[in-house]
Length: 144
Image 1 (cartoon, rainbow, N blue to C red):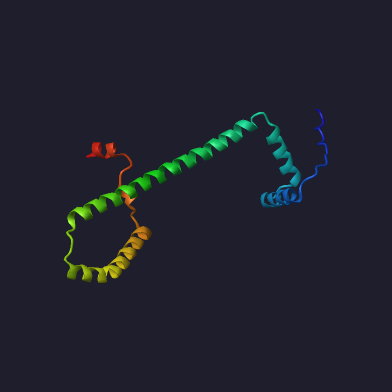
Image 2 (cartoon, one colour; image 1 turned 120 degrees about the vertical axis):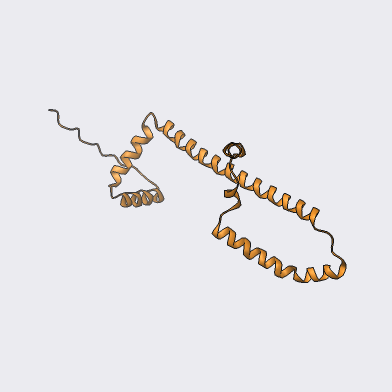
C-alpha cells in the first residue's frame, strides 16, 4: 500500500482585509484557514468553475427577473386601479354648488385622514389588492 502523499506548504501574501475575511470565515465554519484556502484554490482551478459561476449568476438573474415581473404586474394593477377609480369618480360625481363645496372642502382634511388610516390598516393586515386579482384571467374564466 502506498503511503499517502504529504501536502506541500506554500507562502502566500494576502491583503490585510482579505486575510481578515479568510480568518473570520474560517472561524465561522470552525475550519482551518489552510483548508478554506485549499478549497478556494481547488474551486478556482477546477475546469467546471466557470460553469458553476455562470449557473449561479443565471439563477440570481432568474430570481431578479421574476421579482421584476411581479413588480411590473403590481405597478400595472395600481395604475389601472387608480385610472378606473378616477374615471368612475369623475363620471358619477356631480359638481357641488358653491355653499356645499365650501362645506366639503372643510371636511376634506378629516376624510383624507380617515382614508389614510383605512389604507394603512389594509396594507398591514391584508389582503392586498394584488392578491385578490388572479394572475391569469384565462384560468379564472375556465374555473367558473
